[in-house]
Length: 459
Image (spheres, rainbow, N blue to C red):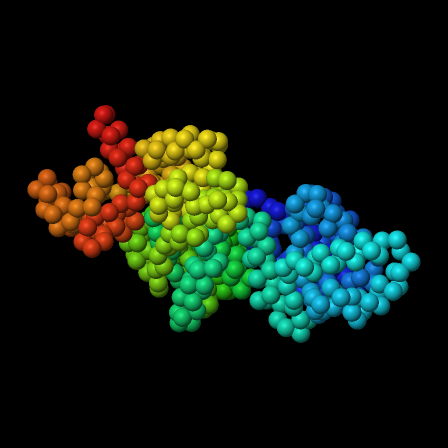
C-alpha cells in the first residue's frame, strides 16, 4: 500500500495569507508524510482525485469561483463516492450553516445568481457532515496531524487499524520518557503482526521533527543485495562522508542480524542528540544485541478491530454495517488470533466465494495450507534458526503443543536436543509462546511448521 499515492484537492481562499503561507503548506506536508499526494491548483485535473478538503474561512464564499468549485466537489461526492473533508478555519460551523456574518454579506452580493439555492443546499449538506473547527490563532501542528490521520484512515480503512488508537500513543510515550540523547526503540512481534506498518506510522508521525530521515524496509534483504557501501551511498548521497551532525530518524525494518545494524549505523559517523533509531524484528535477542533502549511488543488486534478488518476484506463493509459476527466470521477471527495479515488474506480469499458452504470449505483448506504470503513470512523467521531450534520447533508443532514445558524439555533432552536454550530462542523469535508453563503456537505458525516438517520428512 505504501507505494500508492492518493491525489487530494485542497480548495481554499488563496487570498488569505495565513492559509496560503502557513496552514495549507503544513496540511500538505502532513498528507505527504502519509503518502497522500496533494494538488492545490483548482485547474488541475481534479476528477482524478478520490478525496477533497474544503477549507472554509471568512472570505471563502466571497468568490463565485470558489463556490462553483465547491458545487463540483459536492457533485463528485454524490456521483462517485468522493470523500469530502470540511475544515472551518477561523469561522464557526454555525456561521457557515446559518449564513451569518461575512457569509450572509457574501450571499447578498450573489443574490442575482441563479445558483444561490444550489449553494445554500450544498452548504447545508457539508455543515451537517463531520468536520474540523480550527482557530487561526492556535498551533497548526496538532490540528493538521489529526486531519491527515483521519483522512488516511478513510482512504485506507484496512491499513492501520488499531495503530493510531492504541499502539502509536504507546510508542510515542516510551520515546518521550527516554533521556535526551540518541534515543532508540525496538518493535518486536510474530510474523504478520504489523511491525512494519507500526514503524511506518511512527516514521510518518515524527519525520517532520528531524533534518535527516531514512526508512529502510526489508533491511536484511536490502543490505545483502546492495552491500553496506552501496546502501549508505544511496540513502545519504548528499553526505559523502556520512558525517551527520544533525538530528536523524532512521528505521531499520526486519532486522535479522545485529551485526548488519551495527555496520550500517556505524557508517553514519555521528548522530546528534535528539536522533531516533527504530528497529523492527521478530527476534527479541537481535534487538537486545543492538542495545536499543526499550523493546515494544506488538500485540494482536482486539476483537472489535479484528472484526472490522476481516469484514471489510471479506464483505467490503464495516462490521457494524453487516450482519456480523456470523459463526464462520467468528471462527476465522478466533483462528487468526489478532494477526492482521491473516485476517486480511483470509478475508480477501473468502470474498471470492459467494455461498456460505463454499466459504466454510475454503477456510478449512486455508487452515491446512495457509496463503503463500503467510508461508513466506513464517519461513523468513524459521530458516535463520539453528538446527537444534528448527528440530525442537517441528517436534512442538507435531506433538507437544499445549504440553507442560518441563515435560517437553525432559523428552527433548532425551532425544539429544538442547531444549533450555532452544525453547527460549523460539520464544524470542515469536514462534512459540509459554502460558501457565504450557507451550503454545499460533495456528498460522503451527500449520506452516507442520508443512515444513512433512516436506523434510519426505525428502
